[in-house]
Length: 122
Image (cartoon, rainbow, N blue to C red; front, side, top):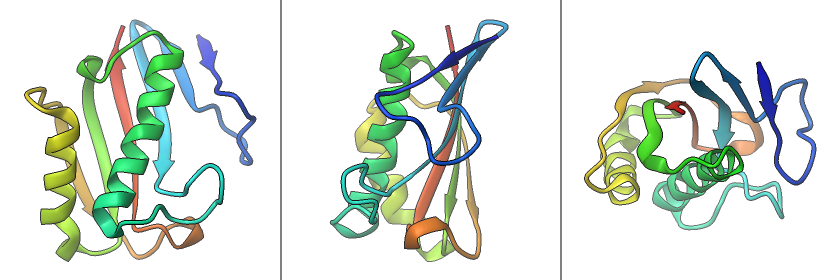
């Protein structure tokens, strides 16, 4: 196994990415802006883009692109956000359509509306 780190150390006891058996496992990426620690501006679409960009940073640190993603699990604080999340997600991935689950949950850290995790193929 090989750990993938970004510029700064995470606050929790985890690694942003872990490479094992030909796959990159990306830890949960919330919509918290890395600079402010608060949810990204722009409502759920802005928050979705922030979480996806943070996922993409882990991919890039592993010399991969978003087209390497095979599975995403997306956690949202309300099922009513599904349509807007789907729209921002589709814009980000374009023609690439990884397997996906969108799971409504009660709440997320820092008041974020979305968190996602992903698996990519090396």
